[in-house]
Image (cartoon, rainbow, N blue to C red):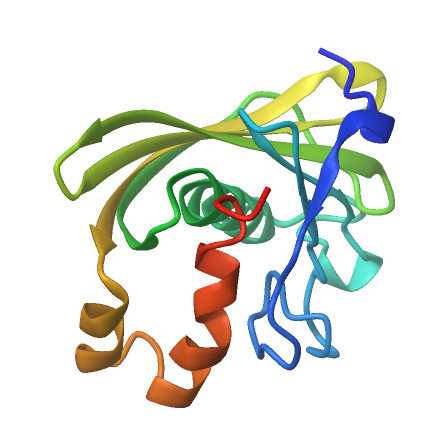
Length: 169
């Protein structure tokens, strides 16, 4: 499924986040940013050569991180909830080379109380499905994320508008 980027809405992220996957200011990170069509969340990423496993093949842990991130952001934006990963399964279908333009897609599949199941995919050139994942996430109120140490109170205060941005659409 080729993605028409022109119809996608950017999803705001918080300035100064140290996140390896989505932190714009993390010098060692992936710098993922996010877009949506209202049903899915997308990121367009090129894995740098420093994140290779064998030769020019992207490291599986990096690809798994990208999938974890896109699934979590699907919950953040599409459901307006904080969530942490409980479990995740990843299937590597085709090798991914560093330096390739990738499309990462996430969607929420099922909601059962605080348990949310999400799906993620990484597509390579010519829209080839290379990696897919399914994750189970525990949704939590913002107060719980602070109480359990997932986020500091000042970070949560700055992140609350991100959780509410779908309401503002």
